[in-house]
Length: 229
Image (cartoon, rainbow, N blue to C red; front, side, top):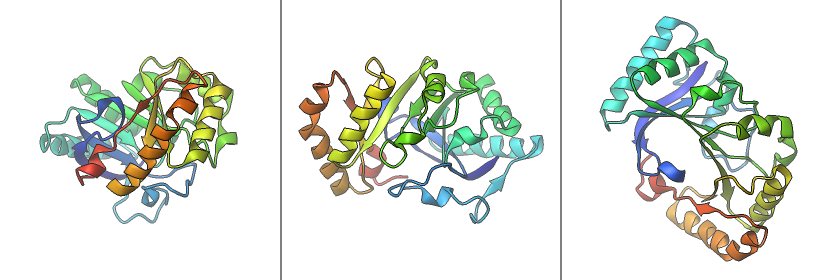
């Protein structure tokens, strides 16, 4: 497994906004979205702080770092993100780390693009599935999506920056019959002004989206508004 960074922050998005977390960011992604705000996690071997975790001793070192980091903000939740963390779900070191923290009462939340089949769903207490429906719509297959639909605690989070994104998410919800799922629309942007513009697109399209029997929540990006990582 490759890890690019570990740091304390608050969850800025979705239903757990405001919760103290430790971010465990894995390296490598199977997609390369043009608007991605963590492009630095794509590279496989060129990251300056890349940690290769391949045995128990290295896993224990990561456990110690996460514990120490969590003390800084009293966190008992790990947010596993990337890159695309599901690439590493079969990795024994990752499983060791997750199981260790579960025995200590921590929760494991995971952000995923939903293109890699979910084979170890019990590892995760919560899944935030964020389909990249514009550039990669055809990458999503029913047999893969069904592995995520079986998970008991999940949301689908769509990034919206313009009206094209609205059209794409409606097509995606229809394709996979997600009408009964918890759907969150998150404004695209890395500055408060960009977020406000995207929120305007969402609110202006609200009645149009609801005409398709899609009920949704609007997600904050509180960490950007507070100027924290």
